[in-house]
Amino acid sequence: MERCPNCRARVQDSPVACRRCGMDLGLLLAVEAAAADRLQRALARLAVGDETAARAELRQSLGLRRDPLAVRLLSFLAAEAAARAAEFASAPIPAPPEDWYLT
Image 1: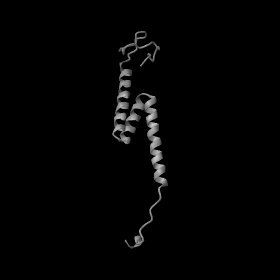
Image 2: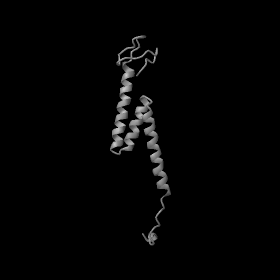
Image 3: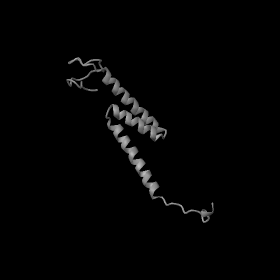
Image 4: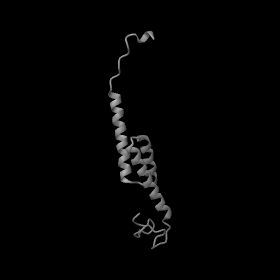
């Protein structure tokens, strides 16, 4: 956090309270840290190929704080899923065996 959300004073070295208005910044800093942690977890999940868990972590991160990287990664995962679905839909359906009606 660069500025106090209450008075817009510059925040220096993650203080517990704003130096100008005295607003408690501890909870806001904790939320930012949790969002960054969720984003790191999502990146780790992507690194091992677990897209479902990565998508869930990205959504949780975005629920805490809107981060451009999280937005882009979630959009990328959605585009990849759509491309796979389109590829699956365009795949030819194999013909049934000649004696399918006998089984």
